[in-house]
Image (cartoon, rainbow, N blue to C red; front, side, top):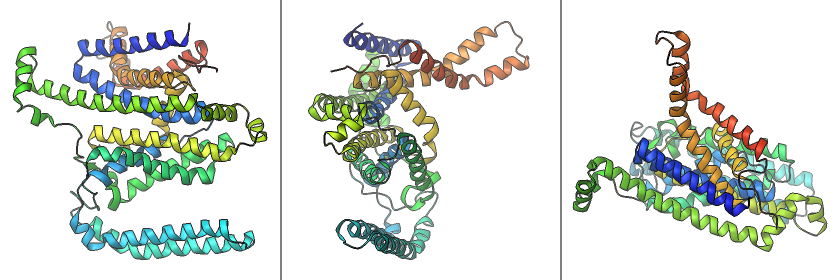
Length: 437
């Protein structure tokens, strides 16, 4: 079967599954699954260009997604004026001093003719001094900021700009972090790189959980602005009332469907733009070079290619896409919850999407994102139905039946493992394999 036929069949089945959910459950559920599937597919595209096209192992997915979520706060939330008055400027000054100390160390290594030992000593002194000066300047202001109505604010807030602007900013934050991480860790062997990126992801999420002045930590930031209308606004529109009467759908349900459809249009537009750009990149000389580096670094290096520099490029591009998807996800949720970013759990899911869909193929990554997230959401009701069926003739007071019904949600983990095993057995290159050019 050709790849084109695989794509047509896979996408048709996925659309059919969503329509079935719409009829059997509700269109609200179907559209919610669809929106999350689109965001998952965008994340998968980011990992696919790193692993599928360059052979880079990135287990720091959730760290970059969390930075995308942070962009929502920085861009769209209104500033907390009292917080800025008691020490916001001092925090900015402290961060700038620490940043300058790091840049001084970098310039010292690049421009200075001193021997390496002296460079290391001066750089160490510079960074440590910058850190302690920063802590001296920001510790007291942070305590004051976090003490300002901690149940409501207790943080600096943002710039009160349109929320759609936070999507590219989320990508830029992830790109900047990827540049720093890549400079440090790229060049390591793949297993060491995987451990390094996972560890750095944990550090980023730990930082966001504990720095209340920036992200409110575990208290979460609720009420993020939307790029689409609110349900209550739509319910007062005359055209919505007419459509509700014509289709005989409750006005509350119809308004929710319209909101989700509006999100779907935005998400699909972003997905198509990213897919278009990645397809151009993959089919270009640059894409062929990246695959050559992936397949044989020694030969590519002998041909004069700067392996580390090219890996850094791909690492930044893929992380930018993941950061963009993270910002979109936080916008859809309407709140920023650092505790929900669980690296081991969701990184595992994203990688299953890449493997099942077909690493090295962008269309495969999209169908992998749709397939895995669809079954991740639906496996709980399916598992509950399955267990109910096999225990029909067992008494309701039976301990084993009660235990199985209470733990039906955990069947999704078994389901993910089963999908992965079946795919690796019968389609080891994924549902839509990479096209060899």
